[in-house]
Image 1 (tube, protein in one colour):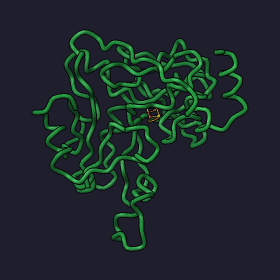
Image 2: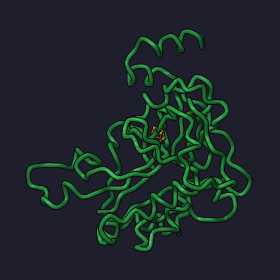
Image 3: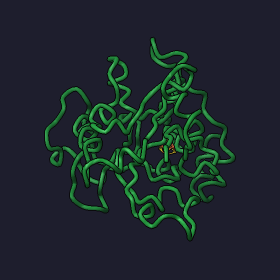
Length: 248
Ligand code: SF4
C-alpha cells in the first residue's frame, strides 16, 4: 500500500496526491513543551518603519543555522527572506490598494502549518510535525527526493544542490551543517526554545516587529494580538493553517 502511494506521488499532480494521503500523527513535544503551540506574528507596520533594507532577522537566522550564501539565485538556500506584499498576499491585492503597499517587502519563512502538506509528501518521515506545532526536519533521514518541496505551496524549503559548507561565512558549531542533496527550512529555532531562548530572528529585530508565543496560552501576547488586530495569513484558502500571522 505504501508502495502504491509512493508510486502515486510520481504520477499525480501535487494537491490531488496530498488530499489522498492520511496525515501522520504528531510526534510528542519534548519535555517542557507539552501543551504549547508555537506561533509567530509579524507587525508589518513596524517592519516597514525599520531602516531601509533592514535584514537583521535574516542575518541572525542564517548565521545561527549555518545557512550558506551560495550567491546564485538558482541554488539559493534560505530560511527567512522577503517577497513583495502583492506576492505574499495575492488575494488581498486589488486595483485600489495603496500603491506603496504593493512593492513593500514582507518577510516570509516556513509557516509551520498546522496541516502541513510537506509532511504528507515525505516518503521517509524526514519531516514531521511535533505536538507543539513545529514542523521538524531530520537532515539525516532526508533522501533529497524533494517531494516536500513540491508539497509546500509557499516555497519555504530549500535544497542543497551542492555541498553548502564552503559557503558558510562562520560555522556555528552548536548547529549542524548540511550536505549536498538535503532539504532544509526554518525550524522556529526549536534548538533555542529548548534552552529557553527566543528565536534568533525575534531577538535580532530592533523594531520588535516579530512576536513569538504560545497559541494555547490565553494570556499570551500572541493571543492578545490575534484577538485585537487585523490579521493576514498566507493563502489560508489552501487549508494548511499557517501559524505565522501578519498584522497590517
Ligand atoms: Fe511545510 Fe511549507 Fe507549511 Fe512550512 S510552509 S510547514 S514547509 S507546507
